Length: 200
Image 1 (cartoon, rainbow, N blue to C red):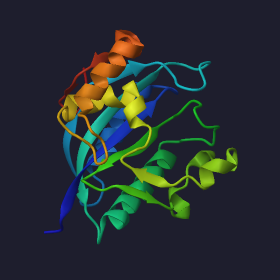
Image 2: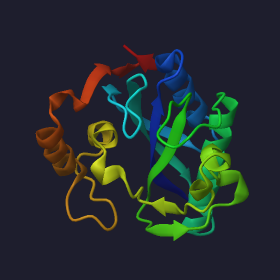
Image 3: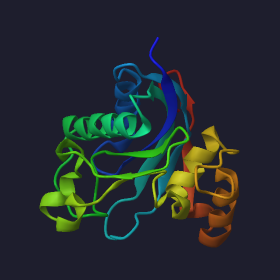
Image 4: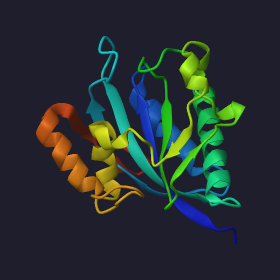
């Protein structure tokens, strides 16, 4: 049996029926080749970051056991490509960074790997044609911005509160609490719990 690693994937959407999109995205992630879904966070309503003149987001995190690959860089890159393919299949359009999203999928953690590597062409963000800097953006794992994002920390803490990501010096739960104190309790509001294949 092929070796697997535990990956945590961040999901977000704020265009159209975002709840349905994220529900369908969880189903799609669960059937990626060699993958096994191990947990789904609560669903959170969160405020947009960067570009404020857009609808609130819905965000969640899933725990997914995925093929490890020949090495962490290979495995994480393959997962990234699969996530970008799913975004396109779900109708993600080319928009500027921080703008609205039909579906956003991010590799947050990939086992115990610490990576900063070039993305393959098929792993480049769709915003690259609008934002030239996006084409050169590295694949960094753990995700470099997640320690500053309550919309990631809150759902990730549902699944792995005691996790200390590689390179961190505190747990996910500690980070969540710190940001809730700074941002207020309305920074990430639970709006659904995962049961029987969907959020209720």
